[in-house]
Length: 491
Image (cartoon, rainbow, N blue to C red):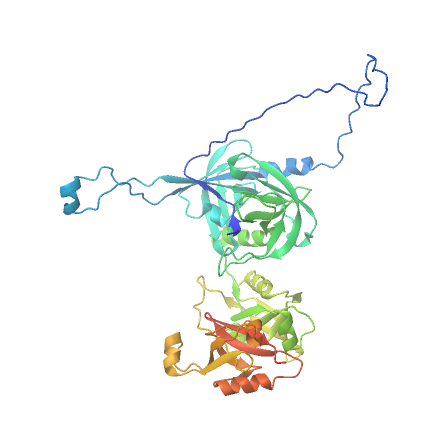
């Protein structure tokens, strides 16, 4: 099975033994005249070969500027104790087998390897959270060979970034570029220490922007630059630079079925890394703004159902009671198109934009509702350090390929829904039906259709069959603890 977006830290129990073999095969060939009937060649001296001129395109200057600011981060953490050939601590076993032949082994230290980028001459270094997570001892190896102990200033798991510090001065630093100006197709170089072989530079292009992988799990903030510059284990925390030697990303993940490079790597944009670093250095943590809503992407079908002219923005699937969005009048079913004048491409983009703002910030949202746009002023509150608790979820239909069941108190209890929950449960979905094609599932709880609340199967059928002609019906369901809109074809 393909492993998605592996983080490229290199962990091992002992330093790897690297065997390098090289052979040199010299092959000589005597010139032969293969033309039929040609006279034998004479012994006249052959003309001296001419050398091709050296290539004019080179990245050596950029590498020379950047390489001294890229470091190796050696990590030591304590492994779990290992039991080896221990009898259970019971008199019965001692009577027949005697004392345990091998005592319980002490935890063996685990060694990890990553990379980092010096961004301040006083020893401030950017790297990945997953590189230093759980570390008991950190050592930074500079490009000149010096090894210095390091301490953790702060880490931010949602962005997979960390700041560490070494006691040094006048260190070479990397210039941090504006990563928003990077274009797909730009040539970039990856610098780090892959597999512990030493500082290495590889070349590629920016393959895509604003990528998400989901490897960070729920609550992560992802806005990756994708690159085909070869990245391997040990490159984590290293630099992705421009051809002028400026930092545009911190290498973080790879997509690979084998764990090795296949040309799909991901780097955290420098602008995001700079923001997180500033927060970690100043306060030791990252405080993020909160709108108080859950959102989902706008699909083509949803855009039709909502009467939108473009497939963009973030669809509000729920609004937190007494939250900032609720106080500003944002409602379920609204589509957020812009924040402070900046277009919102999708739900992940909105989340990243809000997360980059501090609590208490006043923002202007451009919101679409019922085919009309309006502006809303919202004052952000603070995102809790832990994820908000999830709710319950599910959806429904009938002659459109669904078996619907009214939500009785007994059924609600069986589904784990709180008392008083209203809605209709989908008891079954016919394969290949309109409901199945729309993505509805058995166990979904239908809460509304086209902004009409429903509490009986008849209300669901009526709402679906009387939906506006030519548009999919917008079915609001709860699934796996999250509200979700589904575009349901009605014709």
